[in-house]
Image (tube, rainbow, N blue to C red; front, side, top):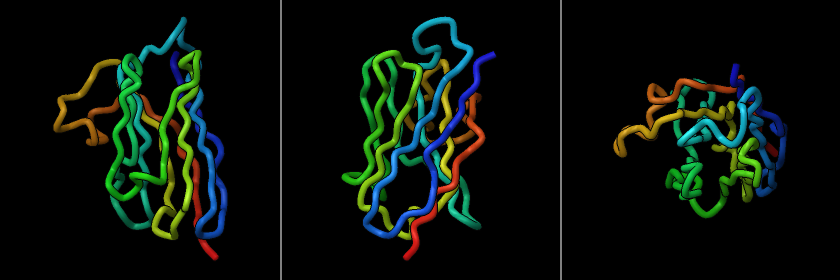
Length: 129
């Protein structure tokens, strides 16, 4: 059974950096997914997409709120999804989830959580002075 397991969350001061990891376990070989996405859910708010990557082409896309500060990537074995977060702001405080889909959602729905059927358990990121 394929599972996603996140790690790397924690508390950091504004302007700091964190790297989140999402390990894919249970896959036979390579990446079973066509698209992988980092979502986040701030306190009291809905879940929103932050960064996504297409595993075959490595094309990446970012929400405007994180563009230029966050970098999504896959390791060479395609079994770990990373999110490098720099210049963190208090508004980045959220539970961060990795999600994946073996098929590519329609272009206009790739940021919709409903289009992802594999999810990690989430990792808390707190940005505060």
